[in-house]
Structures are given as C-alpha cells and as structure tokens.
Length: 189
Image (cartoon, rainbow, N blue to C red):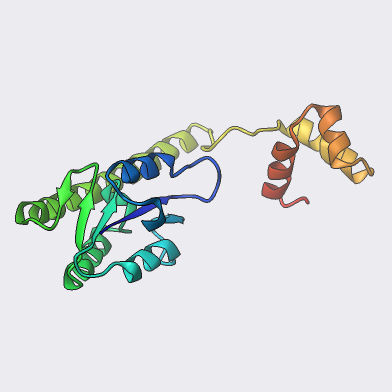
C-alpha cells in the first residue's frame, strides 16, 4: 500500500500543502492514507510523521513529494529511511524520482540526500550573508510593514481612547485581519 507524507514549514495560510497533496494523489495514494505536518523540518515534534511511521507496515511504501519534506537533516533522513527499511517498508520521493526498494534507488537516495543538505546549507549561508551586507548599509531585512508606523501610532492612540477595532479599521482603511496580526506582532493587544 502507498502511504503519503507531506509537510510545510509554517502553520500560516501563506504555505499550503495543495501541491504536495495533488502530487501524492496523482500517484495513486488514497487521500485517507496521507499524513501531514505544518511545522519546521528542524523541529522534533512532527505528529503527522510519527503517525505515518507508526501506520506503515511491511510491504508498504512511504511516498513524499520531495526529500527535504521528510528529514530535518541528511542524518535524520537516513535514520528514517533505515527505520522504514528495518520494517520492510519502501521509500519513494516523487521529485527526485527515487525508490529505495531497488538498489539504484537506494544509492540515489544517499546522493540526493547529501545534495539536498548541501543546497539547504548554501541557501542559509547566502541569506545570512545578505542580511549582514544589508545591515552594514543600514537596512533591516524582512517583510515591509503592513501598516506604516505613523498610521499604526494613530490607530493605537484611537484604540486607547476607546475606539473599537472595527471602527479603527473603517477610519484608517485597514483590513481587520491585518490590524489584528500587526497588534499581535507588536504585543499591544
């Protein structure tokens, strides 16, 4: 039986599992046999992965959309695949076209795992270098503010004077969800 696992890095609506789900279903996996996590790959507490690993049995194959969706690191990825192998469970990665139930797939798994880890390290290194360079130039990285500081100060003043959030949103032409998110980030609720 084919069992699917998918993961996105955050629990916000900005990342969706739709692409992964569609790919897994198109390979013949029953949607009831797809396990999911919305958490950083670096975190240990991935409940969906734990359930998937507990659910699979000898003869099954665990399928992921991409290698980096499964393991926190190359070492973790190898541990999971070895754990699956010990249970008689195969492993497939759709993007890399890898199937550990055949010797060439097992070799490819180790090579691609190393490359995925290397790529992740390079990206992290580039991002950090870019942030350092920007900081030297007086720029701060990250998303631009959804509500400019001047407008936010006026909104906070209005709210502290007793104006409701709904009225503040109408008056300052700000979406309610944007105001709530901005207030939560600034710890001013």
